[in-house]
Every structure is written in structure tokens, then in C-alpha cells.
Length: 231
Image 1 (cartoon, rainbow, N blue to C red):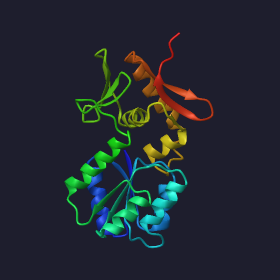
Image 2: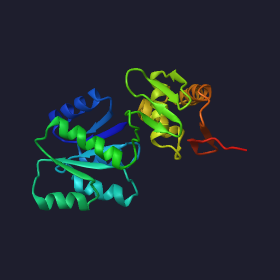
Image 3: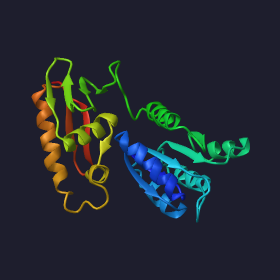
Image 4: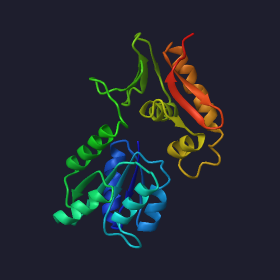
């Protein structure tokens, strides 16, 4: 999962980033409103953590702007302003949840997990595995993907990230550019051509599992994880 934090207090930002990375989230940080807006409107993030008091443009304005532009990424307001009116303004501006500083790490992580679930970004079964169709992905140390028929195969780190993106967006078209940015970041010129290579690797492992799902190329748009067509 790729998260964005926009927080002008550098120590606070670094502390939150460290916590999130320890939980295996991929995190980008910005320290001002204008930079945060540009990052948020890129639509490559799964969740945005947004401070209210920012230089250049406040968090309410950022949230309103991205919502007007059609960006539906979940937004968690993270701020020292605890007045009810401020919370109402945050929610009315487009935020999905509101957490007041100081906060407990456990509560922050719980709020993030809940927001991801509510927005259908992360779908898990009773064992906690990510699932899409007959595919089940263990995102832990084993890095195994398996199907209902009992077969499984181990993934490389890049393959894990790729299939995680497809499974959390099953049925949606993912562009090559989105994959490159989510997996390698903005500085991806050298890696850009590798997207097709890793898509091929991942496809072969899904085929090996004899899954009912497939990664299908959509001409001119990107790729989609979907059910195989039956004749």
C-alpha cells in the first residue's frame, strides 16, 4: 500500500513515516500545502494523511481541491485542532476521518486499516489473506500466492507488489505508469521498461496455479486482473 503524509512538523512526519514503514507501508512525505496538493492529485496513493495547518495551503483546501478534481483517495486529517467546528470543517471538506494530536500509534494504525477496509482497497478473508477471485495472497514473510485448488507458488518482492496492486484493484485497469510509480517511485526511468517483464513473470505464476483469474492487457490503457472468459 502506498501512503502520502503531508505534515510540516518534520520530526512528527519522520516519526509517522518510520511507524508506517515498519508496518510495511510505502510512504511519501511532503512538508507544505502546495507540494502536498500536487502529490495528492497524482491519484497514485491508497491513503492520504493530511495535517490542517500547513504553509502555503491548509489541509482543508487540499482536501476540497482533490475532491473537486475527482480524486477519491481516503483522507485522514491529523492535527492538533480538536474543536468540533474544525472536525466538522475537515469532514465537510472531503476528509474521511479525523485524528487529533497527540495520538497513540495503535490508534493511528487502526484508523488507517479501517479506512482501507471501508474503501474496499484491501479485501481479506478469515485468515487475513488478501483475496481476489480464487487467488489468495499471503503478504507476510512467506510471500505465497495460492488458489482454492490448494496449489501455491512463492513470489519475488516485485512480483508481490505487482499482484498486491492488481488484487486490491481487481476489475480496474491499472496503467503501466501507475505500476511504475507505485513500485519504483517517480525516479523510474531505468525501471520503466521492467514493468512488462515483471508482469510477464507474475502472469506465468498465476497460470502455473491454474487460476480462474488472469492479468489481461487492455490495449492502449494498461492491465486488468479479471476472471478468465469462458467459451
